[in-house]
Amino acid sequence: EAGVTQFPSHSVIEKGQTVTLRCDPISGHDNLYWYRRVMGKEIKFLLHFVKESKQDESGMPNNRFLAERTGGTYSTLKVQPAELEDSGVYFCASSPGIQSYEQYFGPGTRLTVT
Amino acid sequence: GNSVTQMEGPVTLSEEAFLTINCTYTATGYPSLFWYVQYPGEGLQLLLKATKADDKGSNKGFEATYRKETTSFHLEKGSVQVSDSAVYFCALSDGDQGGSEKLVFGKGTKLTVNP
Image (tube, rainbow over all chains, first blue to last red):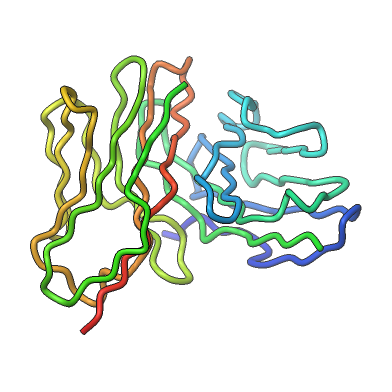
């Protein structure tokens, strides 16, 4: 069974540009999460989808971040326009059910904004 | 809000040494507790978990006991190996968040085991 995949693995962009990160969860997993780790700090929750609906987006830092999960399969996270403080590693995770506390993580996308 | 505080590293040990990584938490309700591990170049993997007080999670020789009275979930291993070199994250999940089992993480502890 394929795990959670993320693309790209690494992105380097200039301040003001747009970047779109993609996450493919494990097939059949209804729950999809986005997290971010800024250098030297904790991994922080961004948002949670249940199928195609946003269950909790309390961790989204501001309106420059837009997440979608059309059709309840893969998800995208767009940053527009990117700022220097957006640099970090963005992790996606998925889990099969509402009472499942085990989340399966992807390898992350390292975003560098220069 | 909920938070996790874990021992900051880096931690460097010799092979076969005893490992302890301290983790304490602050939470309302009754969270589940986790240790995740990130090996170089890979994503986070669940190492072990405990869902209620006094539960002991164990895997690959690692253990951690959910201590409600001290709000702690310290990770231990009796004899580490070079292959245990990784970053370890303590985390909690509060299932009372209206159905959102988001994880709250500590800062991570980098462990290096030398032969």
